[in-house]
Structures are given as structure tokens and as C-alpha cells.
Length: 200
Image 1 (cartoon, helix red, strand yellow):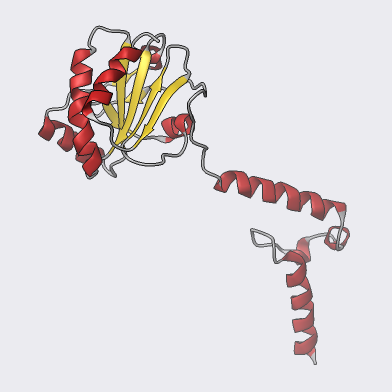
Image 2 (cartoon, helix red, strand yellow; image 1 turned 45 degrees about the vertical axis):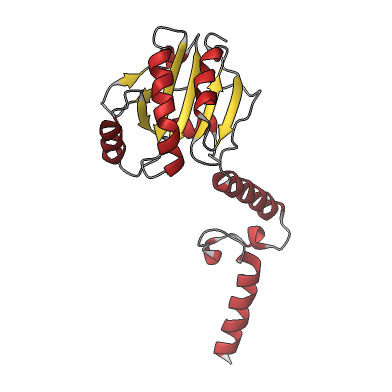
């Protein structure tokens, strides 16, 4: 009988607290707070639900027309591309990976664009999503790429949001407004035409 009563009490408590996202010491909780439907319990439930939802939700991807403030970036060679270098000029941002076949097709065109726009009000920034910086660095050296490259990090992900594919490219105007967004491989002539955005 003792075991049966204990089970009933446990089931009752479990029904009350089964939605709690963390271990709850019911015995240590004042009885007035354990009453079903108490204001304290309802408020706690709402706060916890909202917090967990925000924590689980990925940053939304920015789109054309949105305005962003780009952060600094530590490059693969150890140097820092300061945020000030990304202001008052057009910025082209590309996500890539050493294992991405479509990036392998697009990056030669991006290198040509980088060389063609040197000295113009345009800055190219690329972000590798490789697991290890050395993988990205080896890839850059093997192909002779010299455009600025760093690793994707929390600051950039918070700024541009969740990626939708690879490669993924953004053109950001001098005022921080997203002028263009391309998901997937671009033709060589289209990459070359990005030079027309310089100073916009």
C-alpha cells in the first residue's frame, strides 16, 4: 500500500512538472507555488518557453534591402581586416568551402574580380566554413588565391544569418544595404559584372 501511495504521488507530481525543461525539486518548492494554475507557475512557463524558443531559433538570413553592419574578420594569414575597412565602400562577401565543387568553379572568377578591382572602392571578403582553418589555408595556397579569406564565426553569422547554400554571395552597398544576394554558383561573366557595384 505504501508503494502504491508513493506511485500515485509521483504520477501526480510528474503530471504537474513534466513540461519543465530542467530538474525540479518539488519538495523544496513552497506549496503555494505548486498549486495548479498558480500565477507564478504560468509566468514561469511563459518565460521558459520564450527563452528556449529564442535559443533554438537560428538567425534569419538577411535579404536584399536589409541593412547590416559588418564586423572585423581575422584572416587565415593571421592578419585582421578591421570593420573600418568595410565602411564607405562596396563589400562583396562570399561563403565557400574547400570541399565544395561549385565553389571550385566560382572562386577562379572571384580571384579575377579581386585583381581587377584593386584600388577601386570595393572590398572582397570570403568566409570559409571548413572545420579547420588549415584546410582552408591549404586550399587557398594550392590554388594561388589571394583574395581576403577568413573563417565563418559567430559575429558574421549573427550579421548575415543562416546560410542557404554554397557558394553564397552578398553585395553590400556603402551604406550597409544589401544590394544583391546569390545562392549557388554564378557564371564567370556575372561574377565579373559585380565590379559595376563599386562605390554604390
